[in-house]
Image 1 (cartoon, rainbow, N blue to C red):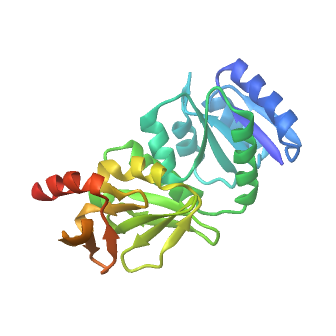
Image 2 (image 1 turned 90 degrees about the vertical axis):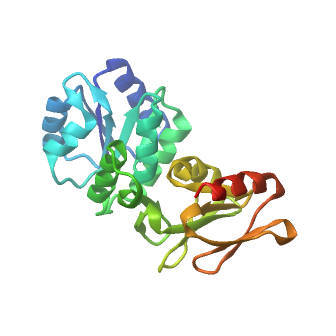
Length: 248
Protein backbone atom coordinates (compact mmCIF):
# COMPACT_ATOMS: atom_id res chain seq x y z
CA UNK A 1 0.00 0.00 0.00
CA UNK A 2 1.06 3.58 -0.70
CA UNK A 3 0.83 6.09 2.16
CA UNK A 4 0.92 9.89 2.15
CA UNK A 5 1.50 11.89 5.36
CA UNK A 6 0.26 15.50 5.32
CA UNK A 7 1.37 17.40 8.43
CA UNK A 8 3.15 20.72 8.89
CA UNK A 9 5.33 19.37 11.73
CA UNK A 10 8.46 17.66 10.41
CA UNK A 11 8.95 15.85 13.72
CA UNK A 12 5.46 14.32 13.50
CA UNK A 13 6.03 13.22 9.90
CA UNK A 14 9.41 11.61 10.60
CA UNK A 15 8.07 9.87 13.70
CA UNK A 16 5.11 8.50 11.76
CA UNK A 17 7.40 7.29 8.96
CA UNK A 18 9.50 5.42 11.51
CA UNK A 19 6.44 3.80 13.12
CA UNK A 20 4.99 2.77 9.75
CA UNK A 21 8.28 1.19 8.70
CA UNK A 22 8.60 -0.78 11.93
CA UNK A 23 4.96 -1.76 12.64
CA UNK A 24 3.07 -1.82 9.32
CA UNK A 25 4.67 -4.26 6.86
CA UNK A 26 1.78 -3.85 4.42
CA UNK A 27 2.94 -0.26 3.74
CA UNK A 28 5.33 -0.33 0.78
CA UNK A 29 5.74 3.36 -0.09
CA UNK A 30 5.59 6.52 2.05
CA UNK A 31 5.45 10.10 0.78
CA UNK A 32 5.23 13.36 2.75
CA UNK A 33 3.70 16.83 2.38
CA UNK A 34 3.74 19.76 4.81
CA UNK A 35 0.47 21.56 4.13
CA UNK A 36 -2.76 21.86 2.16
CA UNK A 37 -1.15 23.05 -1.08
CA UNK A 38 1.66 20.51 -1.16
CA UNK A 39 -0.76 17.83 0.05
CA UNK A 40 -3.10 18.36 -2.90
CA UNK A 41 -0.16 18.16 -5.32
CA UNK A 42 1.15 14.98 -3.65
CA UNK A 43 -2.26 13.28 -3.80
CA UNK A 44 -2.47 13.97 -7.53
CA UNK A 45 1.11 12.82 -8.13
CA UNK A 46 1.27 9.67 -5.99
CA UNK A 47 -2.36 8.35 -5.87
CA UNK A 48 -2.01 7.09 -2.28
CA UNK A 49 -4.07 4.27 -0.77
CA UNK A 50 -4.04 5.89 2.70
CA UNK A 51 -3.63 9.55 3.65
CA UNK A 52 -2.69 10.61 7.17
CA UNK A 53 -4.02 14.17 7.43
CA UNK A 54 -3.33 16.74 10.14
CA UNK A 55 -6.38 18.64 11.38
CA UNK A 56 -4.63 22.03 11.71
CA UNK A 57 -1.80 23.18 9.41
CA UNK A 58 -0.09 26.46 8.59
CA UNK A 59 -1.88 27.10 5.29
CA UNK A 60 -5.28 25.71 6.28
CA UNK A 61 -7.05 22.73 7.82
CA UNK A 62 -7.47 19.11 6.85
CA UNK A 63 -11.10 19.81 5.97
CA UNK A 64 -9.97 22.66 3.68
CA UNK A 65 -7.92 20.10 1.75
CA UNK A 66 -10.84 17.66 1.53
CA UNK A 67 -13.19 20.39 0.27
CA UNK A 68 -10.69 21.45 -2.42
CA UNK A 69 -10.06 17.87 -3.43
CA UNK A 70 -13.68 16.91 -4.06
CA UNK A 71 -14.03 13.19 -4.78
CA UNK A 72 -11.24 10.78 -3.84
CA UNK A 73 -10.68 7.03 -3.50
CA UNK A 74 -8.14 6.72 -0.66
CA UNK A 75 -8.71 5.88 2.99
CA UNK A 76 -8.39 8.82 5.36
CA UNK A 77 -6.90 8.84 8.86
CA UNK A 78 -6.83 12.19 10.67
CA UNK A 79 -4.00 13.19 13.00
CA UNK A 80 -4.98 15.49 15.85
CA UNK A 81 -3.93 16.91 19.18
CA UNK A 82 -6.31 16.16 22.06
CA UNK A 83 -9.48 18.13 21.30
CA UNK A 84 -12.72 16.60 22.61
CA UNK A 85 -14.85 18.63 20.20
CA UNK A 86 -13.01 17.25 17.15
CA UNK A 87 -12.72 13.75 18.60
CA UNK A 88 -16.50 13.51 19.15
CA UNK A 89 -16.98 14.50 15.50
CA UNK A 90 -14.64 11.71 14.39
CA UNK A 91 -16.50 9.19 16.57
CA UNK A 92 -19.92 10.23 15.21
CA UNK A 93 -18.65 9.81 11.64
CA UNK A 94 -16.61 6.63 12.35
CA UNK A 95 -13.64 8.18 10.56
CA UNK A 96 -10.36 6.98 12.03
CA UNK A 97 -8.11 9.39 13.89
CA UNK A 98 -4.85 9.18 15.81
CA UNK A 99 -3.94 11.36 18.77
CA UNK A 100 -0.52 12.97 18.96
CA UNK A 101 1.87 11.58 20.10
CA UNK A 102 0.98 8.60 17.92
CA UNK A 103 0.82 5.19 19.59
CA UNK A 104 2.33 2.30 17.61
CA UNK A 105 -0.46 -0.19 18.41
CA UNK A 106 -3.21 2.31 17.54
CA UNK A 107 -1.40 3.11 14.29
CA UNK A 108 -1.19 -0.57 13.37
CA UNK A 109 -4.91 -1.05 14.08
CA UNK A 110 -5.83 2.04 12.03
CA UNK A 111 -3.80 0.84 9.03
CA UNK A 112 -5.35 -2.64 9.25
CA UNK A 113 -8.85 -1.13 9.29
CA UNK A 114 -8.00 1.16 6.39
CA UNK A 115 -6.78 -1.82 4.39
CA UNK A 116 -10.07 -3.62 5.11
CA UNK A 117 -12.17 -0.65 3.94
CA UNK A 118 -9.94 0.31 1.02
CA UNK A 119 -12.82 -0.26 -1.43
CA UNK A 120 -15.43 1.54 0.68
CA UNK A 121 -17.37 4.12 -1.29
CA UNK A 122 -19.10 5.83 1.65
CA UNK A 123 -16.29 8.05 2.95
CA UNK A 124 -17.74 11.22 1.41
CA UNK A 125 -20.94 10.81 3.45
CA UNK A 126 -18.89 10.03 6.55
CA UNK A 127 -17.02 13.31 6.01
CA UNK A 128 -20.33 15.14 5.66
CA UNK A 129 -21.45 13.73 9.01
CA UNK A 130 -18.16 14.80 10.56
CA UNK A 131 -18.71 18.34 9.28
CA UNK A 132 -22.23 18.26 10.73
CA UNK A 133 -20.79 17.26 14.10
CA UNK A 134 -18.22 20.06 13.97
CA UNK A 135 -20.99 22.51 13.08
CA UNK A 136 -24.16 23.43 14.91
CA UNK A 137 -26.56 20.65 13.94
CA UNK A 138 -28.64 19.34 16.83
CA UNK A 139 -31.54 17.02 17.47
CA UNK A 140 -33.26 15.74 14.34
CA UNK A 141 -30.34 16.86 12.14
CA UNK A 142 -27.69 14.84 13.99
CA UNK A 143 -26.47 11.58 12.44
CA UNK A 144 -24.03 8.89 13.51
CA UNK A 145 -22.12 6.33 11.43
CA UNK A 146 -22.23 2.72 12.64
CA UNK A 147 -19.95 0.10 11.09
CA UNK A 148 -20.80 -3.57 11.55
CA UNK A 149 -19.49 -6.71 9.85
CA UNK A 150 -21.87 -6.30 6.91
CA UNK A 151 -22.16 -2.60 6.11
CA UNK A 152 -21.72 1.05 7.06
CA UNK A 153 -24.97 2.52 8.40
CA UNK A 154 -25.88 6.23 8.49
CA UNK A 155 -28.37 6.66 11.33
CA UNK A 156 -30.26 9.66 12.69
CA UNK A 157 -29.62 9.98 16.41
CA UNK A 158 -33.34 10.58 16.94
CA UNK A 159 -34.10 7.16 15.40
CA UNK A 160 -32.08 5.31 18.05
CA UNK A 161 -34.43 3.80 20.66
CA UNK A 162 -31.81 2.27 22.92
CA UNK A 163 -28.37 0.68 23.12
CA UNK A 164 -27.58 -2.53 24.96
CA UNK A 165 -24.24 -3.97 26.07
CA UNK A 166 -23.50 -7.41 24.65
CA UNK A 167 -20.11 -8.36 26.07
CA UNK A 168 -17.53 -6.11 24.36
CA UNK A 169 -20.15 -5.14 21.76
CA UNK A 170 -23.05 -2.67 21.69
CA UNK A 171 -26.41 -3.47 20.12
CA UNK A 172 -28.27 -0.48 18.64
CA UNK A 173 -32.06 -0.83 18.54
CA UNK A 174 -33.42 1.57 15.92
CA UNK A 175 -36.91 2.67 14.90
CA UNK A 176 -38.23 0.71 11.90
CA UNK A 177 -34.91 -1.00 11.22
CA UNK A 178 -32.96 -4.12 12.11
CA UNK A 179 -30.73 -3.96 15.19
CA UNK A 180 -27.05 -3.20 14.54
CA UNK A 181 -24.22 -4.83 16.53
CA UNK A 182 -21.08 -2.70 16.86
CA UNK A 183 -17.68 -3.84 18.15
CA UNK A 184 -17.32 -1.02 20.67
CA UNK A 185 -18.34 -0.85 24.32
CA UNK A 186 -21.44 0.87 25.69
CA UNK A 187 -19.40 3.42 27.66
CA UNK A 188 -18.14 5.07 24.48
CA UNK A 189 -21.69 5.62 23.24
CA UNK A 190 -22.85 6.81 26.66
CA UNK A 191 -20.28 9.60 26.43
CA UNK A 192 -21.11 10.35 22.80
CA UNK A 193 -24.92 10.30 23.00
CA UNK A 194 -25.40 11.67 26.53
CA UNK A 195 -25.63 15.30 25.32
CA UNK A 196 -28.45 14.29 22.97
CA UNK A 197 -30.94 13.02 25.54
CA UNK A 198 -29.62 9.52 26.25
CA UNK A 199 -29.32 8.08 29.77
CA UNK A 200 -27.58 5.00 31.16
CA UNK A 201 -30.36 3.38 33.21
CA UNK A 202 -28.49 0.16 33.98
CA UNK A 203 -24.95 -1.18 33.50
CA UNK A 204 -26.14 -2.86 30.28
CA UNK A 205 -28.62 -0.28 28.96
CA UNK A 206 -28.53 3.21 27.43
CA UNK A 207 -31.88 4.66 26.39
CA UNK A 208 -33.22 7.58 24.35
CA UNK A 209 -35.36 9.49 26.86
CA UNK A 210 -37.69 10.67 24.08
CA UNK A 211 -38.55 7.07 23.20
CA UNK A 212 -39.98 6.19 26.65
CA UNK A 213 -43.68 5.28 26.66
CA UNK A 214 -44.10 4.29 30.30
CA UNK A 215 -42.17 3.79 33.54
CA UNK A 216 -43.31 0.88 35.71
CA UNK A 217 -42.21 1.45 39.29
CA UNK A 218 -42.63 -2.13 40.51
CA UNK A 219 -39.70 -4.47 41.20
CA UNK A 220 -37.06 -1.76 41.06
CA UNK A 221 -38.53 -0.17 37.98
CA UNK A 222 -38.51 -0.79 34.25
CA UNK A 223 -39.06 1.33 31.16
CA UNK A 224 -41.33 0.47 28.26
CA UNK A 225 -39.97 1.93 25.06
CA UNK A 226 -41.90 2.91 21.94
CA UNK A 227 -41.16 -0.48 20.31
CA UNK A 228 -42.50 -2.23 23.45
CA UNK A 229 -39.03 -3.27 24.67
CA UNK A 230 -38.75 -3.48 28.46
CA UNK A 231 -35.56 -1.94 29.85
CA UNK A 232 -34.52 -2.41 33.51
CA UNK A 233 -33.64 0.53 35.75
CA UNK A 234 -31.02 -0.02 38.43
CA UNK A 235 -31.76 1.19 41.96
CA UNK A 236 -28.79 3.53 41.67
CA UNK A 237 -30.23 5.23 38.56
CA UNK A 238 -33.89 5.29 39.61
CA UNK A 239 -33.80 8.63 41.46
CA UNK A 240 -31.94 10.35 38.62
CA UNK A 241 -34.39 8.98 36.07
CA UNK A 242 -37.45 10.10 38.06
CA UNK A 243 -35.98 13.59 38.38
CA UNK A 244 -35.41 13.80 34.63
CA UNK A 245 -38.89 12.46 33.84
CA UNK A 246 -40.48 15.05 36.14
CA UNK A 247 -38.92 17.82 34.04
CA UNK A 248 -39.88 16.39 30.64
